[in-house]
Amino acid sequence: MSQVRAIVLAGNGINCEMETAHACKMAGADEVHIVYLWDLAAGDASLDGYQLLCFPGGFLDGDDLGSARASAIRLRHTSINGESLLDQLRRYVERGGLALGICNGFQLMIKLGLLPGAGGTQRLPRAIGLQRALNMIVSGETVPAAQLSGTALLDAVTDGDVVDAAVALAEKVVAEAQPCKRLRDLQVRDPQAEAFLQFARNTVAAGAGPYPAPPRCVFAGPGGPR
Figure 1 (tube, rainbow, N blue to C red):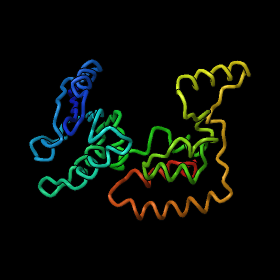
Figure 2 (cartoon, rainbow, N blue to C red):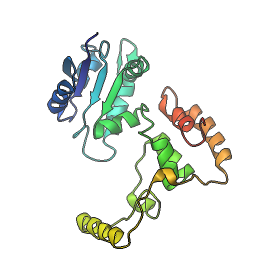
Figure 3 (cartoon, one colour):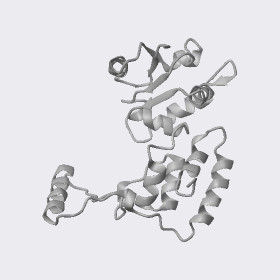
Figure 4 (cartoon, rainbow, N blue to C red):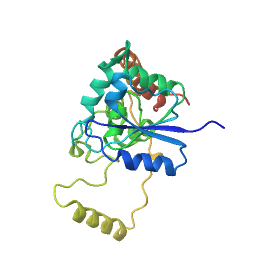
């Protein structure tokens, strides 16, 4: 049986790379290497020969909700012998390599167009509506919680102490014996669903460029295969 080799990225504010590497070893990886992003960019390291790629987070290019955007731009436009780092990542994924994104590393995978999201193509449209959900899924943009207040995605939004609000909500749920809410039980109700999905298929495919995830998000959503 071939050995399992893992590569953990570091640099540009990434932290916990040593802990991530240790976790890979504990999970059974035979070899784990911590590699700096710029070693990949310089061609001194490659994703070839690895089966697991880890994007740790921490303070990757900052500590805010859009901080992975800068790294995504770098990876798209940094090239090695005519091949961009993004192309190398896509080649890695297309040959079946596994990728794990943690914290800002997960944001980076979305900004690069590598991820539709874990179950999000089915769950989010049920929670906030088809059109709003699909726009969020294919763009990876963040939305303020206040804009989603009143949807099935959130039970409550508060400007006060989060712990106090959470305790008050829990007490209310118990006192009223509220049933367990399951997104799978909700239906996607949109009278213009088919027209919107056809529009989305055309526009997303045209604007996705070399990024595979956005069109597949549309395909994997409520209007995809049955």
